[in-house]
Image (cartoon, rainbow, N blue to C red; front, side, top):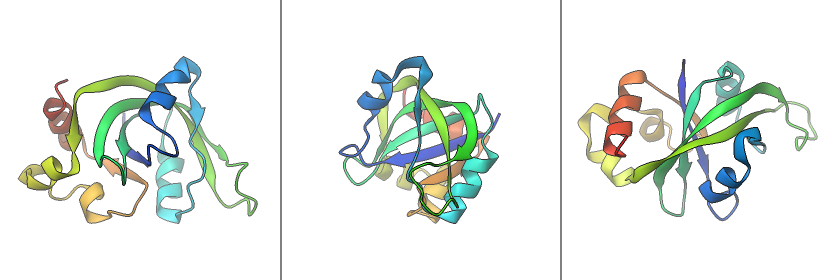
Length: 137
């Protein structure tokens, strides 16, 4: 299993909206960065991702599961980009803030910090375990 982090501005798409979609999940559309696209193309059904509220909140609030592997993003008129379907798995008991991640030395090389504008990034297994612990899981 691989681990990921997916960013969304809560005013555009929030954790609560994701949860409301249930087990069927929702297409993660609108990604227009080639590195993020390549990350989504690597995602496999069953992989897990942190759901990160960007701009407003700046915190990891939950975990989602990839329920459908990449396919063409119909919102992209150029035909260059893809999407995946994700479903909410569980919330973190305590959101993990960007500030908390920045002070944790073991997380210094996370994509979230190294490529801060990247909307879909990878997460190493040891980073995943630490953030889950920080989030009360």
